[in-house]
Image (cartoon, rainbow, N blue to C red; front, side, top):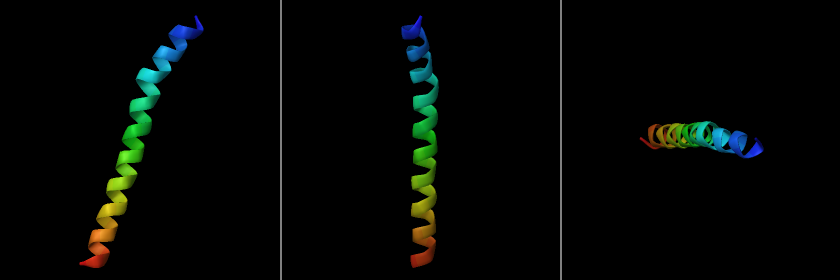
Length: 37
C-alpha cells in the first residue's frame, strides 16, 4: 500500500516540483537579463 502511494507521489509531485523550480529559474534569468540590458 505505502509503495503504491510513494510511486504515485513520485509521478505527480516530482514533475510539479521540477516545473516550479525550472519556472523560478527562468524568471530569475529573465529579470537578470532585462536588468542588465
